[in-house]
Structures are given as C-alpha cells and as structure tokens.
Image (cartoon, one colour):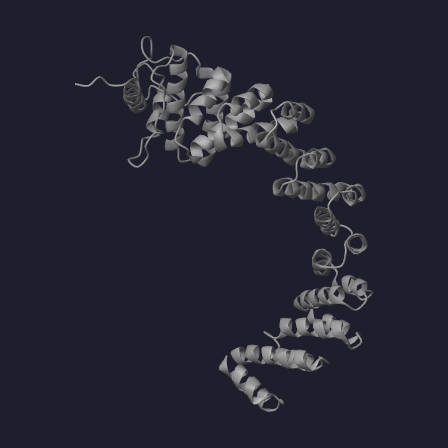
Length: 427
C-alpha cells in the first residue's frame, strides 16, 4: 500500500471532523480548541452546541472547500488551517444569508486575531470562489483597521491579480481611516505599474472625502486611460461641493482633450443644482463641437425634466446653429412627453427657421403614437420641404400601425409621390 501524503491525511481528517461536528465555525472565543488529545467528545459537548450542529446537515450537492496545504505544517499552523477549512465548510452549508455573513465575519476576525498573515496565505491557496473572496475581503478590511502597513505588505507577497485585488481592498480601507499614511506608504513602493495602480486605488477612495488631494495624486501619475478616467471621476465628485474650485483647477489642465472632458463633466454635474451656471460654464469654457453640445444637451435634459419652460426660455437665447438645434430638439421631445399642450404653445411662439423645424420634427415624432393626426398637422408646418416630406412619411408609418383605415384615408388626400406612398404602405 502506498503511503498517504500529509495532504491526503489532512483531507480525510477534515472530512471526519466536519461529519462528527468536532470543528466549529471559528470565532474569537474559540482559540484554545485543539484536534487530538484532550478534545471534547460529541457526548460531552453542551446540548446547545449539539442542537446547532444538527440543524446544519451537509447536503449531497455541497462539498466543503478543497484544502490546499503544503507538505508539512507546524503545529500552530496546522491548527489554523484546520479551523479555517472547517469554518469555510460550515459557512457553505448555511442557507440563511444573514447568518452566512456573520459567520464569514467571525471567521475573518478570528483569523486576524490568531495569525492574519497565515490566514491570508491559507485563503490565497484555495480554489477561487465567491465564498473565499468574501472571507478574504473581510479579513483584509479588519486587518487594515488593526495594522494597515502589515496588511498592505502581506498583499505584495501574493502576486498576480489576486495580490492586486487584495492590495486594493487594504488601501481602500486604509485611505478611509488615514489618507495621509496610506499615501506615504504607496510613495515608498518601487516605481512601476503596481505603484501607479496603488495610487489610483487611494485616489478613488479619496475622491469621496478629499477630491482635491485625489486629483493631485492622479495628476502626478504618467498619462494613461485609467489615470484620465480617475481625474474625470474625481472632478465630478469635487464639483458637487465646490464647482467653482473644480472648474478653476480644470482650466489649468495641460492637454485640451482631457481638459475639455473634465470641464464638460463638471458642467454636467453642476447642472443638477444650477443649470444656468452649468450651461454658461459649458458655453464659455468648451470649444464648439461635440463635447460642448453633449454637455449642454445633458444639462438641458435634466433641466427640462423639472422645469421645461425655464429651460426653453434659456435655450431661446442661443444663436441659430447646431447647438441650438440639438437643445430645442431635446426640450421639444421631453416637454411633449411631459405635457404636450404647453410644449405646442411654446413651439407656436417660435419664428420659422432651422431650429423650429428641428423642434417640430422632434415634437411630432413624440406625439405620433397617441395622436397621429395632430402629429401630421404639426409636421406639415415644417418649412424645409425635404424634412417635411420625410417627417410626414415617418408619421404615416406610425399611423398605419395604429389605425390603417384612418391613415389610408389621410394618405389619399396628401400630395405624396408614388414612391413615398409605396414606402408607407409597404410597412
């Protein structure tokens, strides 16, 4: 017979121990339990514990996590590994989500109190699973609050994506507890991609509480899509509490592409509380083009949801052009959806022109599903002949779907070309 390896013995011992209930979910008060000489028997165990064990049978389709262990372990390390294995198995058997969360927290707390480094090593050697990741994240958060430098240093020894995720968890907790200390620790890391990622992780946490420090951290890093994304995100957080300071800082950003993106984000964020100031910022600081139009339209869309009349009055001051067209189209559509009658009255007050044509097209398209005849009347007032015919065709197709008899009667009276009629009737 071949001699069994230590891993095989340990797996068998673990299965037996779980079956007879010798190993319990580890907790801070259970440090002195041992496997072997001196352990309690199932008969001697208090009745409450025996009852608890009986309520959590191992289901046939639930296998305990596979223990991945080195060939030999010191006695104290073996105790930790055995306890952690049985703890994971117990959590896996539990069906109540709230109880599972408490058990996971208790296990992570015990691991930190016993030997956080060995506990992290144990978890890093297990097969990846949602349960293992959950317990590891809890362990790192608890450890970071207790001894953040030691926790961060331990994650660097894991390596790979798992080590990066672990360091991110530690730095996130550390930055919330002591931002300055976390920054100082990251600065002493060797230069490289790992250090840049660590700075971005700290900046992400700082963005919620200290956006000025966060943008300063991110701005000092080499240019990259991740860095730029972090700067934009942090600027939006800053704009919530200090839009003036955020926009003043953004104006000084080197590189027009990033500067414009940050300013557009600040303007859009400001639009939630002060749409006029936000729109003015977008118009004055952004060059004409897509970025400016997107920012203004984003502001208008939010504004029109709450006060379409005020938004329409403000947009009415724009000069004719692409920006005005885009703005009035959005207002017409949103206002028609909210309250079609006053939106129509607003359109009637506009002089004929390109922007009015665009607004009528958007308005008629919005009301066509529930009022196709009225939509057709509006579309007929578009002064651009090509746009008018195209919009009437669009409405006719919608009308045909809703009421083909009425639509065909209307169609027979309209001066459509035979080609247009064929497109409409083809559906």
